[in-house]
Amino acid sequence: MLVNAYGAHAGDKPLEPLRITRRAPGARDVQIDIAYCGICHSDLHQVRAEWAGTRFPCVPGHEIVGRVSAVGAEVSDFKAGDLVGIGCIVDSCKRCSECEDGLENYCDGLVGTYNGPTPDEPGWTLGGYSQKIVVDERYVLRIRHPAEQLAAVAPLLCAGITTYSPLRHWKTGPGKKVGVVGIGGLGHMGIKLAHAMGAHVVAFTTSDSKREAARALGAAEVVVSRNAAEMAAHAKSFDLILDTVAAPHDLDAFLVLLKRDGTLTLVGAPPTPHPSPGVFNLIFKRRAIAGSLIGGIPETQEMLDFCAERGIVADIELIRADQINTAYERMLKSDVKYRFVIDSATLSA
Ligand code: NAP
Ligand code: ZN
Image (tube, rainbow, N blue to C red; front, side, top):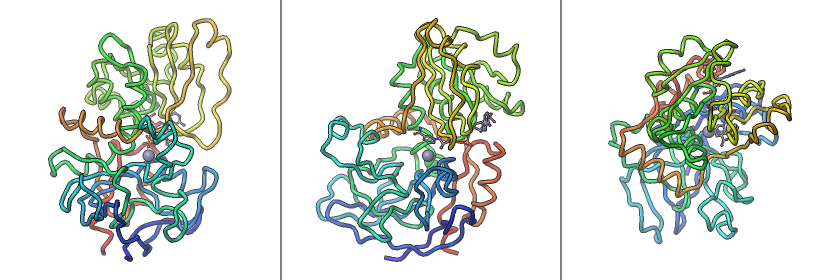
């Protein structure tokens, strides 16, 4: 079936309206009429070919929410009309130990929602800046938020799980001091989630203008990271710092804020490496630098349910599809509080 989409034909070209093909649902497939799709900074990295291996045309989008419009004969958990979401994963090998553990995000055969290998036309997956998507039921998430919140639920599918998973893995909870670096799409969810888990949350920002807004998200303290005195006041005090920054920067400035055995977890994925951090900042306090990639399907459902029970959604700015290119420019200037979400109804125009 042909559907409307938005994508780019080359890394140096703007996104524009496209027509793409979706397969007819197979026995285990769920067809979704997309209502909203968030704009992740990864979409920009990929469609502008900042990361290696982008295939064109590229249709980004992996923060997808909508309603089921058809299901295959063997699908029993979903039916037409259900509110559902698709995140960053639409397939994996289903056989390896990572898949068996529900950590499909670490499967070597992971198929991303866009730019991943698929037998479907044109040979790579096309993402959620489109009217419909067809996905194996294993990778479909149930949304239990009220339907009125649907647009603001979309960013949970990537920004939510990418911060929830490391916060859980490094045991965020009462008595823990957690830093979140960068108050963008990921960072603002990291603040909300760490606060909801009971941690003392400190937000680090380069934008003085976000100081008050960060408190409203749940940060007990806000540090402007360019201010050396403000940074020094937090020396050797953090259990965990989650770094969501999309550009290379000095990691030592944050390493020295960790206490003994503290961890700096990188989730931001800049196209070029960070400068290598000083070894002495690691060995003297047995500190660690780690990374984390989105989250598996069971944990994504756990995160969605955690948020539904507590009324947690993203702070969003809803846009039309023809505003995507402008939204990218504003995202690069950190000029969004805190996630753009595309109203998929505007793709039909
Ligand atoms: P975003 O909305 O653009 O937020 C990034 C934030 O980082 C900005 O709002 C800004 O916050 C801060 N920042 C930007 N440039 C900076 C610089 N040069 N120096 C210091 N701070 C800077 O992006 P996002 O969608 O949250 O994504 C962030 C990164 O995570 C991207 O690289 C994306 O590809 C990656 N990502 C990784 C995963 C994963 O699984 N690991 C998943 C999704 C996304 P302030 O204004 O507060 O300073
Ligand atoms: Zn993303």
